[in-house]
Amino acid sequence: MGKYRWRICGLVFFATTINYLDRAVISLLKAPLTIEYNWTETDYANIVIVFQLCYAIGLIGAGRIIDKVGTKIGYALATTLWSIAAMMHAAVSGTIGFMTVRGFLGVTEAGNFPAAVKSIAEWFPKKERAFATGIFNSGTNIGAILAPLTVPFIANAWGWKWAFILTGLTGFVWLIFWIIIYEVPQKHSKLSKAEFDHIHSDDEIGTDSTETKIPWIKLLGYRQTWAFSIGKFMTDPIWWFFLFWLPDFLQKQYHLSTTEIALPVAMVYTMAAVGSIFGGWLPMFFIKRGWTVFKSRKTSMFSYALFVLPVAFTQFAGTTNMWFAILLIGLAMSAHQAWSANMYTTVSDMFPKNAVGSVIGFGGMFGALGSIFIARSAGLLFDYYKGMGHVETGYQIMFIICSAAYILAWLFMHALIPTMKKIQH
Image 1 (tube, rainbow, N blue to C red):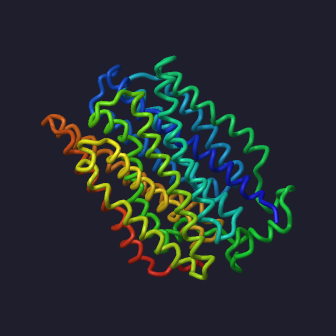
Image 2 (image 1 turned 180 degrees about the horizontal axis):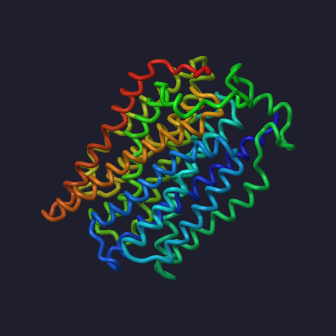
Image 3 (image 1 turned 90 degrees about the horizontal axis):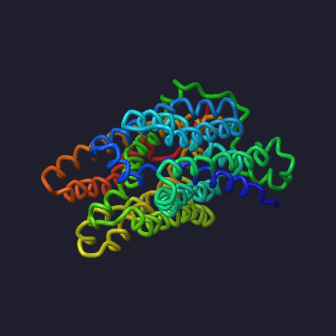
């Protein structure tokens, strides 16, 4: 049996890496941009909110478009547009200018995860999907690792505009490989029959991609859709909070320079990358030992939710030693990525392949809306406590919120779908 499907997984991994590299650049340039444009904490939060709002809007249609035009064309179009948007940051100035290009970036980057999860659903049997999803989802961490290791140094050497231009260009390099390598298994000339049969080894009768597409309105009537969406609404904001505020926290709490934050930020995302891959491997381990897919997925997600709880003690542990704080934040982000790998896979567990992109897009929209709420709250909270001279109190409140989100999300999801039944239509 061949292993061509892992080449596809690699392509999706690199696209996700680029996607997160592009969106993380602004968080590392917050300090110089704040000085240049005199931003308040609320100004920065509003720029983040515009990205998240447009990301949410983009997700409404991105999944449906990808289901309609196919993964190859949909992924290529999304990557082209978000790469242009990333480079356009170098051509604007001021709060309004950055809001505009962040909005364009948000709409276009929305195509990544519906296309990525659909690619995995097309190319992997159910028993391997969580592991493959964990691998490609680790690209979010690699992108976030590459950002602090490159962006501050590019900005110091050539100015902040070149940081946006050079990172944006990487998407066009990926496009070349995607166009050459990708095709759905049914049409791929390099796929062996043995691997094709393996990919479809656990397909269920009546749920393959040739079936009639499920209308949008009908998708909204399923508890499975709402369980995924509520889970995303409650947990996606935690990841986004750390993505956009971790560099700021390190600078304010430990007085690090723009380049000094590179190592601790890279360590956090390295831990998260390991968590993403482990998070996909664990349910596969359970399934191979005879557990049902449902039991494997739910048990794994519950254990990951528990590992986020210690982040509530970040500031107590890190008062005298920054690396204790980094360890707890890294553990929480690692658990998030393990959780996320399984969250995405629950969709292909419960829905036919022709509905995966739509459900991922709908749930992702809820995740982005939750992130808007967190970003707005964080901006107001930090400005309030900054005015009182106690900015660390604002961060402590946010860490407590982060710690509780996953266990609450697991309970809500379990109440809605005590068993993960496959949708029949």
